[in-house]
Length: 177
Image 1: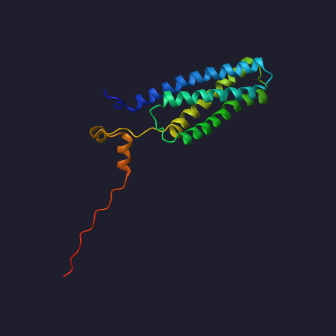
Image 2: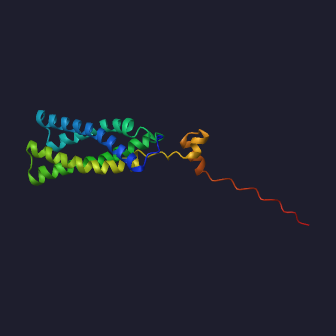
Image 3: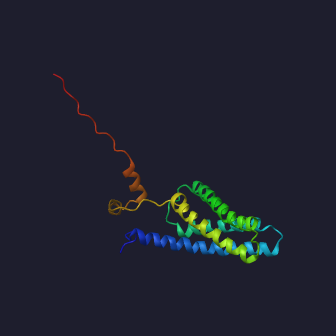
């Protein structure tokens, strides 16, 4: 079987697995930093968790760009990073909003309760991040078709040629008698 000839479900499963691997590393970083800050500093719980989330976001960008989505379009890195940060900020608000509600809305502020609601917040934010990163940030290049493989041209070149409008045919000159 040739690369790229696998079905869409297999590609999605591979993408989810890679996303999950990077996510696990980011989650470990997030929990380590937040728990260190909670136990070694006098920072408020949500403020410490925001810092931990930002550190995890930085780790995740490196993992997503160079592992999970390394085969995706790299032509607009500034736009990619801007979108990544915008969607990560929404994820940060989701994660820390849940922790904020647990601590300040319900008074659940023990170390165990913080970590339980941190898990819940990360879980919900992860669903949002997966959808937004794959849909908007790390866009897939067009799938290689048979014409491209026959000519040996790069996929993007073939794709661009297909998207260009053909030039109109010249009109035949009419002879008037």
